[in-house]
Image (cartoon, rainbow, N blue to C red; front, side, top):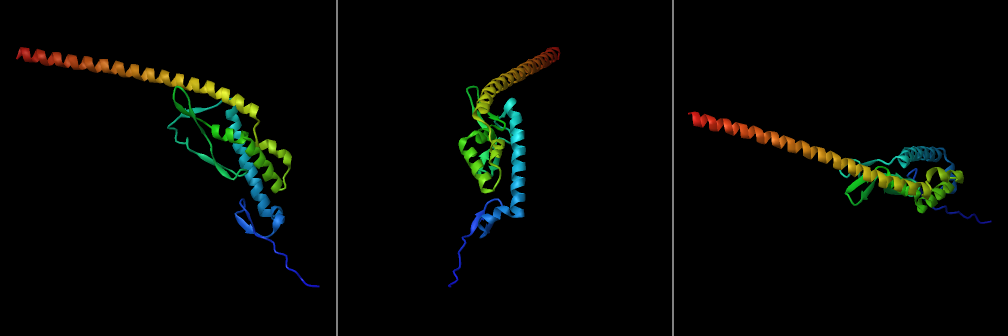
Length: 191
C-alpha cells in the first residue's frame, strides 16, 4: 500500500480574515461562529434602525455631513451607500437610510444572504430577517416623494421668512442712514 498525501487547498475566510486548510470544518470553529453571530447582531441592528425610516422617511440637506456614509454588507461583500441622494424637480436632498433600504430590497442581496447563511451552516429561514420585500420598499418610495415635497415646501417657507427679515432690516438701515443724513444736512445748514 502506498500512502498518498491528500492536498487540501487553502481557503480564505473573509469574516475571520484568515487563510486556512480546514475545508468546511472552519465554519464550525468557535472563533468563526462568534464572528458570524456578531455580524448577524450588528446587521440586525442596522435593519431595525432602517425599518424605522420605512414608515417615516427622513430628508436632509444635500450638505448634511453624513450624506456620503457607506456601510459594509457582509452578505454581498461590498461597500454600499447608506443614504441616497434624491435629485428631484425642486432641488437635491438626501434620503436618510435610502441607500441601505434600496440595497436590502434588491434580489442580489437576497441571493447573497441565502448563500452566506448556507455557507455558514445557519438556518435558511433567517434570510427574511435581512431582506425587505419590494412592496414595502415601493410604499417607502411613495412616502419619500411626499416627504421630499414637504421638505422643500418647508425650506421655501424658511427662505421666504429669511428674505422678509432681510428686507425689513434693509428698510431699517435705510431709515437710519436717511435720518443720519438729515441730521448732517441740518448741522451744515445751521453752521
